Amino acid sequence: MRFRKLPFKTSLAAVILCGAMVGVAQKPEPAGTEMIKLAGALAGQWLIVEKDEPTSRQPQGETARGEEEWQVLPGGMPLMEKFHAKFATGDQYDSALVWWDAKTAKFRGIWCAAFNQQGCTAFDVNWQGDAIVMTGEYLQDAKPMFWSETFTPGTDAFTQTLDMGESLGKLKRVATIHATRAKK
Image (tube, rainbow, N blue to C red; front, side):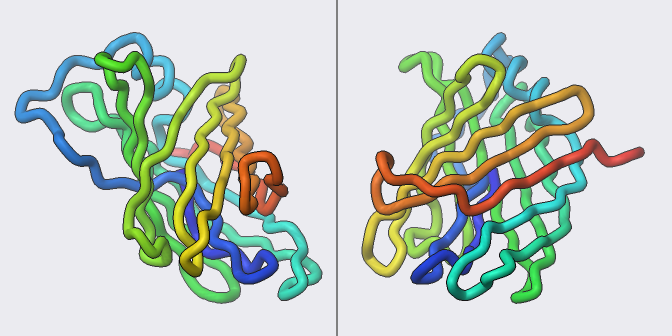
């Protein structure tokens, strides 16, 4: 997942994965089929090109290049994401962790970024057909900001879209990332 500050209206912050996990078990459990499927879609090093939509502050939008790394930690989980991109306004970083909660039979996630006023915030992860959809919220200028990020995976590429808004029912596209697997 990636999160970064976007110049959208009143300087919305954009989101993509990041992480710090609370309550990690001393001895990791082996990965289940849910984690294997998710890791199979995202794990690896990716070169990215991000295109931010036009805003009042950036009428032409902005394009950035960078990398995303998705790595399964020892024991089969969590899946960790590290994001870095070079924008005209400077380098952006964030990170996320995603894991399978067998008790609730759901994926859990947490995203962290320096511009997130809470530091780290939780998010949900679901499969919708072949797409991975992550949704969450965080505070921006003391107001909740909602986001939805969709990953459409391929063999050696994926497309990642980010929609944001002041409510889940009023999300607007703010960025699209095209990722290709880095050559070893």
